[in-house]
Image 1 (tube, rainbow, N blue to C red):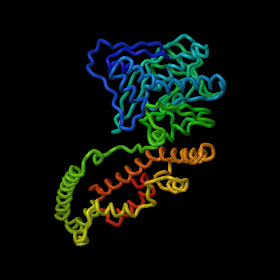
Image 2 (tube, helix red, strand yellow):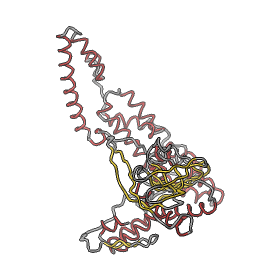
Image 3 (spheres, helix red, strand yellow):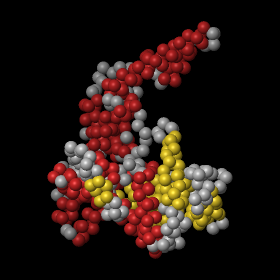
Image 4 (tube, rainbow, N blue to C red):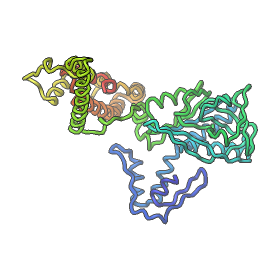
Length: 445
């Protein structure tokens, strides 16, 4: 909220903490809320409100962002009160959200007398590693009290704790902290000598790997991937509850599609068009050819191996095929023409018109609706309670996003098959891949 107030140059009030962030003196000329084409009505209304009254519009935007977090906190409080002997854990993707969750819970527990009111401030260290393996240490001040949950953020054999070990502070002063990790395990340490620890009620999903609790609470967001979702949804023994803002998941279908997306890191090829990629590949091939030719000449001069023998090894390493084995087909078909022919041989086609219950039943068999089980169940119940006409209209409305998504995925498969990276594939292999995509485009991609 502080960041949004600064960027928008306005004054925002946080109802939960009572804080006010005022940057009205900052000279901001224009503020606009960028929305996707399929944005819901409420988002368009906020966009319009920001254009008319920046102050009210940005405040309304913030309230929606914080709504999911507020709901999570309230449910955590209720569970903590009803099942105080249960182990609980809150998770979020970002460190900012984790800090906010820990701060709110800590404030609440101080108010109800669960933890001591006397605070001790320590400088904790947090190690972050980027995609290139480079590590950076962040130092931040945290407040701790007796009764505070604490999590260790690095393995420490001297203390007998692991990265992710959680305990409760039993004794604390400016020089030392004593933590009860289990019934038969207590550790004492000097915060200045062992600064790798933090608040322990909430933690990032990355940090929660390997931890098991009775009940967990997840603040889902658009940054999450399939792997992170799996980690977050398997930390509990009894129950997990997930919360998400309508800004992250503005349609029902967005929740499963966002949380199941691949987390693979992008390479150079993901950022280049076909022409640029082709040029890059040719340049790399030229450099490698030059390198292997020079190496082959030196080995030949030394009498270690013949030039032709080394060339065969180099060609095998580079994945090249001898020119003699390349057959050029005079009847080669253009990619877009071949793709269109294959498309016409695809699975059961999507129905142009849906008028009867039979039409709906046949339509539901299409691979585009494999993940629409929820709407299929609602439709089936609707037949019994609302009648055929209303149920058919319901299905026609809910099927459209799945149809568009399916068609887009098939188009993505076509684009991938036309990529220079897959130039080694025969037309027969590409046809088989496209046919497979009709049944499961995600798996084909």
